[in-house]
Amino acid sequence: MKRLVFVTDVHLTEGLESRERFARDLEEIWRLNPKPDLLVFGGDVCLWSEEATGVFLELLHGFPIPLMHVMGNHDTTLDVPDEECRRDFEKWLGPANSCHRLGEAHVIGLNSCAMDPAYLYSRDWHNVLGWVPDGDLEWLEQTLARIEDREAPLFLFVHIPFFSTYPDRLDAGQGERDVWLIGNRERVVELLKPFANCTVGQGHLHENEHLYVEGIHFVSVGAIAGAWWSRQGFAECPDGSPRGYLVADIEERRVELNYRGTGCSPKYQACIFQKESRRYLNIFFGDAGEPVYLKIDDGWLSLQRSEGLIMRERWTSAHLWEMPEMGAEREVTIRTTLGGRELLIEGVPFIEDYMQNETDRTI
Image (cartoon, rainbow, N blue to C red):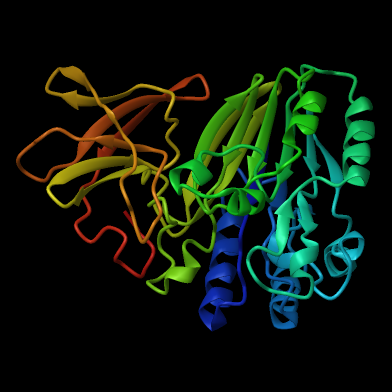
């Protein structure tokens, strides 16, 4: 078996706390059992800051497994035209596009960032568009053409997503959609369609979501920095998932994906919380397209999805379900499906201070 870990949105500019937190996260990742064979970073180290760059390189110095890096919108060079925006990234971390062989699997990192000329030299959050430049598309086409086995597992990692319901849930206008999603995604999808076992890992949005387009599994992954901008601590992402990372296990041609919350027990995969007068179930890596059941006595109750609930500020979640009235606050058992396998989550807790606690969960 081979294992890769996908870590995205590190955001090392958030003071000493972010540095110490990330150092602990790296130690946790290295202590995984089995250990990872490849660590993929999905961008937003915050190379805009020389201090963040130095901290990142220092913490990764001598890290004992191969690394792959994808450029994020916060890693672009601000004082140059679009065609040079990757200058500092490639100076410190290597090519913006790369390919790695992991057993039978092929792992590709692809640039998905292009500077908006209207915001040149600016740190305004609109300054980088989701777009795969022509040269990167050509590189991807040539790289995929060299893969003879179209049934082998294929992973493609980007920072800005190809697909997500995030802009719709935020009711974002076109100006915002251009920074949330890749504008020329159809061209990449056409290149990926011949591959029967393709997973695309996406960052940028700091949330988890599963979508399937043309047989391709698009997975948005929560940020290891959580909702850093909230100033309410780093414990959760805006969708209520614990800050964390993706673990992909590859056994010959079978791929198993799991989300791990940093500082959390591996069993902490879901929680129940109360918002106003209702209670909800949040399955952190849950697939909205799959049924979810609650164990009631000797049977199973089908749960209804909840859409549009504001988790914090204006952010919502793509993986919430409505809970029935159950009286006492007690742990429950949940059954669902993820990637074709049945997932049984036991001991799902009710959390009273959900998205208010400033520390990681050790549940």
